Length: 404
Ligand SMILES: NC(=O)c1ccc[n+]([C@@H]2O[C@H](COP(=O)([O-])OP(=O)(O)OC[C@H]3O[C@@H](n4cnc5c(N)ncnc54)[C@H](O)[C@@H]3O)[C@@H](O)[C@H]2O)c1
Image 1: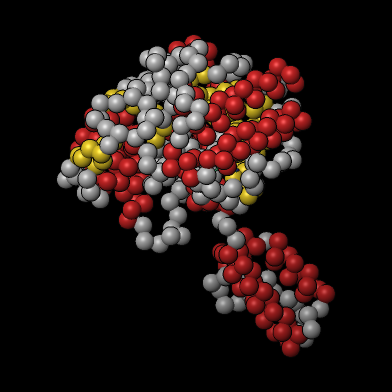
Image 2 (image 1 turned 30 degrees about the horizontal axis):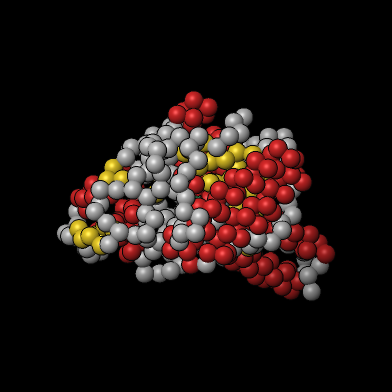
């Protein structure tokens, strides 16, 4: 039996558990019981010793809080409650890193259709972070200050996989998020896309261009879904005074992109790393302009903080042909891959380049990361991913590893 006195001592030893960590290597317990009864003393000391070692074992199983990067301190007055829908995806997870580092309370809502817990595992267990497994097609109730609405499949194979679901996510899902913004008086940023311009007849595309979209083509579920999402945003703004921001995002690349989603950069990098033929659909004369993901995140955060309500193009205007990208990536990887051509894809836009004068003028934003630097980080990421044998291996330990 342990006396109440020794229990008190044991309690003291537990509250001073930091000291225990240092002292556990000693054979003798750190805190001793003082009594004249030798048997009682021995029994109590044995119990304390046992509990001390149990405590150390339990502590070692807890997530190590000091493994989190140091984040900005904010008090309750300037700490915002921010929801990122699609926060487990490629862009969303980088945005989460930035908002967390800035000291906000961040909620991620994702159904993991294309997103992955691995993208945000670096924050799991942090007191400012919460992950909710939820499909935004269903209503959501939370108290918030800001919403970044990014949930939607974003690459052709993913959004064409279930076109009806893609339309529902961008229409019903967006109504749900706008309704949430209306109820909580939160500011909401809608992640729209350059695809609202379709196969454009105007180059580069300014926000005033209304686009050239085939409403019944294979990409329509996404293009028209995003166009309706924009329409809904301005309807809620006019009718209910919801504060909206609309970012028309152009092609973005970087670490945590999906390996198998058929996008130009990930396809070319993986083919080059595996020394397989690099496939170009069509002549390769069609152009693209790619922005690095940290530039995009900076653009989104700046837009949210601004007073500008109309749509804003966020992209990198540096335009290159697909052929040029293929050779650049092959050279940077140091690969022996040959470049092969396959038939053109239906409704594939021939030219795509943002006019970012609005972003420059209204937000003071423009992309900073040169393509060679961004590609080097992306190649390094995929090289590591391809060499991974253990699925549970962590890769995102440092949240800012990918910021350039
Ligand atoms: N990456 C680009 O180049 C690009 C270009 C233009 C626009 N965008 C837009 O940016 C946003 C993010 O794109 P991304 O590249 O990170 O794509 P992504 O596929 O990596 O991320 C989208 C996330 O949304 C989640 N999601 C999809 N449907 C959902 C649903 N019904 N409920 C809850 N979660 C759902 C997915 O699981 C995923 O985590 C998308 O809205 C996309 O349309 C991206």
